[in-house]
Image (cartoon, rainbow, N blue to C red):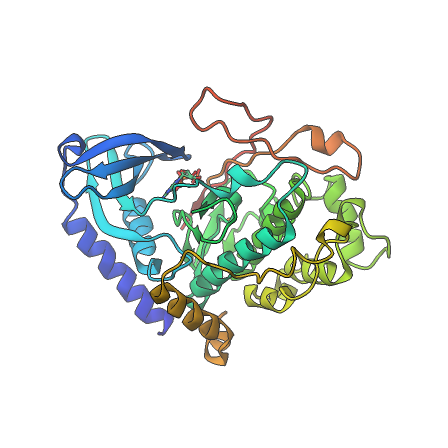
Length: 386
Ligand SMILES: Nc1ncnc2c1ncn2[C@@H]1O[C@H](COP(=O)(O)OP(=O)(O)OP(=O)(O)O)[C@@H](O)[C@H]1O
């Protein structure tokens, strides 16, 4: 499908949603079970539909901070992408109350990826591969449709089981068409690509797949190590500067926090995290690294006992067929030819930057409900205006 066709569909979906955005009394139709999470612009609740008994996740976006246009865009993009088995499913339900715009999604009962990454340890290589393979398929699906997620981070990868046999990409609030102009306002997080961190660029940016690829590379590092590779991909960040020297081949010495990876994994990171965005690979290039070992330590030498990276045992045969179709689609030349940032809460240990060079930023769990474990440092958001 051409990008123009997808633009038309997205606009049409927005129009239909706008015309049907009824005011509802939530308690009449839904029973709220518990809060699933909080974001910058609202919250997500687990509810049960009173008549149908269906469990759903209702995403509430505060009217005070969310324009109707932004809500309609997030809803219609989510709906448009939801046929992909690696993207959160939608129910086609959107409505409003006095204070919120709301839409319904399928529930990921195991939470989000952030919950299961052990800080400073990381996940086993086999689990990481299984998970990022699905995220890469989701991203490739989006990129083939000329859409850029722009908020890739573990909190936006929803999981259905602790082994990551089934994971889905979510939160399309920042998603924009590739090539659309956006204006940088402020702030940055560890997943932000260096070109977006470049404060000298007041003129703004054109949305590009390569920023998702960078964030995907950072996500991969976080999953395998339980640390951030740096606080910000900016000059002045010692970990980032060390990485840049190695990446630009000004030194042959692999930065200390990257020494746990095999040469194959380092080659992959060099491609995903190319400083020059024009030289960064497409997300589908990562598929060619899944058969290689990524970690040097003995425990991981077998690459997780040779478990196939994509083992979605809980999926139905219908879903399996879709997976196959997508795998082929993602490798098809047609798709190659078509393929052409964030309100954020990152969780970054401030201890990291002053710490030993072998210990980069470690995860601290976000305090979603305001009374559990605190986080050490919250980086500032960037909001982008189209
Ligand atoms: N469908 C779902 N099933 C289970 N949990 C969910 C679901 N959707 C969201 N969550 C939880 O709620 C959190 C916040 O949701 P979401 O990222 O959509 O909100 P947001 O306001 O867009 O966040 P951000 O601050 O990243 O913009 C997620 O990180 C996740 O933990």
